[in-house]
Each structure stands twice: as structure tokens, then as C-alpha cells.
Length: 331
Ligand code: CP
Image 1 (tube, rainbow, N blue to C red):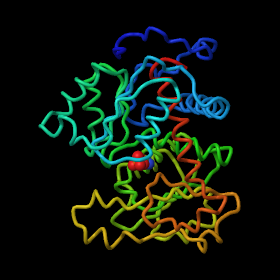
Image 2: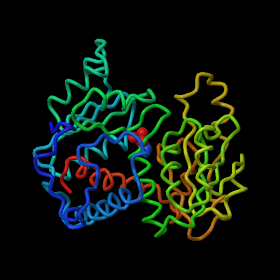
Image 3: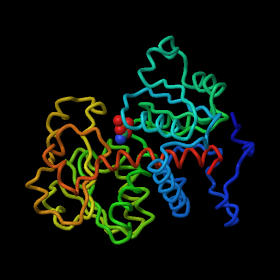
């Protein structure tokens, strides 16, 4: 209930005041990774480490006591919805969970996204929205006076996933500069790929894109990568990248985005990370995946210490705790 246009009542961030700068996130919508610069990323990651430390020491705090988050999910989710809920609860806040299918809300009676958002902001301080249409988070934000966080808008962006992906890479490997990162799978529809690629343009990385022909990275995004002067190559074969990659970012082929299911069947098993593939990878590389997986990483890879995807899942909660605290003006 803090209007975006007003300063929040309690905006006490000791570190920022000490440094004489604002983190710039208080009261803001989080719609795209385009709004993050390196300083903001560093800020979020420092806060995420603090959240992890706090959770490990005491489990929860009352930093966001009195605040309410609405989780409004028009598409299925396990990790994003539950980690936002866990994040809010570990910070002492409360949640209105509309995550079990909006068919049980007045959306099923034909209520528009705009009216749904205008209603839910009467009860809450922040709305986390997942929706199947590109641009839906922006449309919701334009109708809201409280911050809206994009939890995935169709094949568009998934900015908080990209934050936790980047945090995980840095946390696991100790750096971002100098890394070779291979993105594998559905690069066309994979919104997490789009958001993470944009964030990586802030760093001195090499990018390798591995996909079937019909699932290549969108041309506009590839042009952004080239314009940023990044060392980049595309291939159809994981074998071309496995030996030099520091990070394998594996993604699911997104069946729900195909209009022609025969095309999906043709490409769904294009890539699989198996123990045999992992034998050719570096000792100190990592495999991450936004999850869910549907066969593209074999279960037998899970016991490999380089398989970091469940550590990545846990990082999602810490990063979302940091983000919520910042957006709600409580750092
Ligand atoms: N990574 C991710 O967005 O997972 P969910 O779809 O389960 O939220």
C-alpha cells in the first residue's frame, strides 16, 4: 500500500545512507533485467548473502512484518511461487496466494488483469505476477500503484530467475568475468535464457548457444549480444562446447509454447546431459537449470558435485528475500 510515487514511510537502509546512495529499488516495479546495472546487481547479491546467513542462523526475521504480498499466478509454477511465499514468510510478512489456478478467482468470470490488479493492491504491498502473455507484467504495473514483480511473462522475461541464476554462478565459481557460459535447449521460447543473457552482457564472458535450428536465440537478442562485443558462437551440438564450458545452463523445450506439437516432438530430445557427457567437462564447471526438467539432464547426473541445480533452487529464496526487502524499502 505504498504508492509508487511516494517515499515509503520507513526507508531505512543503513549501508546505502552510509554510502550516500540509494539502491534504487524501493517502490519500483521489477519487470525486466534491463533495469539492473552492475551496482544494483552487486547490491542484491550482497543482500542475498546476508539473507542466507540469517536463514542459516535463525531461520526468519520480522523485517517485513505488516507487509502483504499477493502471488498472482496465471500459469503453473512450483519454484517461483513457493520461493516468493517462503521469502515473504521468512521475512515476517504475509501472503495472499492465488497460485493454485486463477480459475478459482474472479478471472474465471471474465475479470480483466487490470481490474484484478486494481483489486489486489487494495489488500497488499507488492504483487508478484506470472502470466502467459509477453508484456503482461508491464500492463499490470501500469494499472497498479504498488510494485509489480514479473515472475515470468510468456516467452518474454523472468527477471528474478535471472538474478538467482547469476547469483548461483558467482557463488559457485567465485566470479563472472572470464567465464564461458553455454546455454542449451530452448533458446527461442526460454524466457530465463533471454533474461540471463541480457544480464551477462554486463560482464566479460564468452557465450555459447546450443539449440536445434528452430529454437535458436531470437535475432534481436543475438544482435544485442553481438553489439555488446561478446565472444559468441552458435551450434546444434553440445559436444562442441562441453570441454571448455565453465557453466552449462540447460533448459527444457517449452512444449506449451508450440502451436504445432509435431514440431515439439521433433526437437524435444535434442540434447541430454548424461554422466558420459559430464566425463568430457571441466572438473570445476557447474551445471545449472531453471527447472522443471523433463529429461534433458539425466537423474544419474544429480550425484555429480558439479550438478548445482538444487543449490540454485535454494538461492532463489535468498535472492527473492533480498529483492522483496529492497522493493519494500527495508534493507
Ligand atoms: N524456474 C521456474 O520458473 O520454475 P517454476 O515454473 O516452477 O516457477
